[in-house]
Image (tube, rainbow, N blue to C red; front, side, top):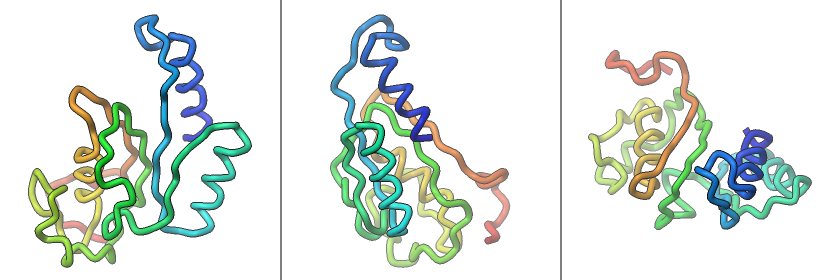
Length: 139
């Protein structure tokens, strides 16, 4: 996803893929709870010369970008996480479309992403096959 993100940034900086209008003020934000993955993400951006704010920490319980409203979101959240502490977040302001089940974080990820979208913005994210079904979640 990082490699494709770089291509996206380059295309928008030249005005391609953006209706011919140059877009040079692209910022990268993210958060990762796994320390090793967080370090790899930061290294990946650095070796490609991309300035990004990748925070380390638990996205649900310590959102490091709480006021961020993004024009584009590209995400690959972890699939079918059952131990995400959802029971402690029943009243969270991100749950605009209903409280996610405490035993599976898939719907919480979708709502977290939607919460951080600016008006008239776009998100693309990868989830497990069947993760948004109406059947009870199983990890």
